[in-house]
Image 1 (tube, protein in one colour):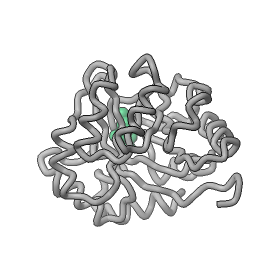
Image 2 (cartoon, rainbow, N blue to C red):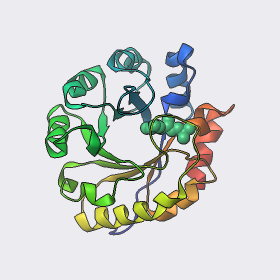
Image 3 (cartoon, rainbow, N blue to C red):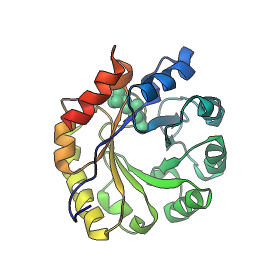
Image 4 (cartoon, helix red, strand yellow):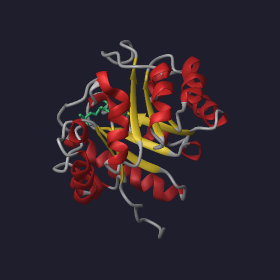
Amino acid sequence: MPSGSTPPTIVAPSLLAADFARLGDEVASVQAAGADWLHLDVMDGHFVPNISFGPLVLAALRPRCTLPFDVHLMIAPVDPYLAAFAQAGADHISVHPESGPHLHRTLQAIHALGCKPGVVLNPATPPEAIAWVLGLVDIIMVMTVNPGFGGQAFLDDQLPKIAVLRQMITASGRDIRLQVDGGVTPLTAPRIRAAGADTLVAGTAVFGAADRAAAVAALREAA
Ligand code: DX5
Ligand code: ZN
């Protein structure tokens, strides 16, 4: 990849917007629809004001899907649960800097478990939060809503942060995915891509669509 360019767009449907009574069929459906990764939002009702699912659900879904499991942990403390998510089949584990006192150590632990580490930045968290862990991350994710719920409106004020992070990644020379989560639709995707992101998480825009293959394709094409 030439310096300064961005890799092909990755589309990662978020299971949070799926029919929870039919989760096995839902993951198979988005895999068949052409998704690249499956995004799994883990919420504890403490770090964020909602509760979703944990490692038992990941382990149950793992045989139903060959896509990378892109696990977004919105739990605190996070360190005691990393191994459980790795054993349940996580491929990527992304954490918020606010979910533990030692982000550097948490990222080392994720790597030692054989998973790709990611850092997630809340809307109020500055890009500098990852400046001294750039050498340890494979994914940086920008929240373009406040975490906890699907179906919220995209926060345009995060676009300059995406651009700053793209510059930081380019300067690092490392192969780091720049991911965006929250309010991603075919309408917001072009602005997200123009700002420098390469990976789109989309819950409502994929699981809420009657034709999921068309929805995945629309996101990829819009970006
Ligand atoms: C929010 C989650 C998101 C959410 C996105 O806390 O991290 O992944 O599922 O949902 P949409 O795409 O509906 O905004
Ligand atoms: Zn998420």
